[in-house]
Length: 70
Image (cartoon, rainbow, N blue to C red):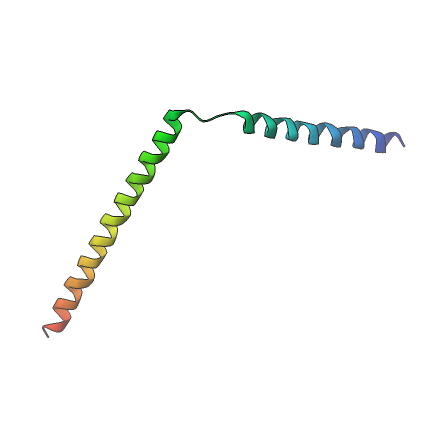
């Protein structure tokens, strides 16, 4: 009986700690710097993907040109 009481108490403490941390993190608001940094990171990622896509297209085009001239 004592073992089950201790295990139950530990489970309640652990669940309470998880609930408190989740509640605390949800209450934390992001500032304008966070949204600006997120927007800048997304723009940089899109630019990188566009450059990569263009380079890949140029590679395919160059490969097709050399194969077509044979």
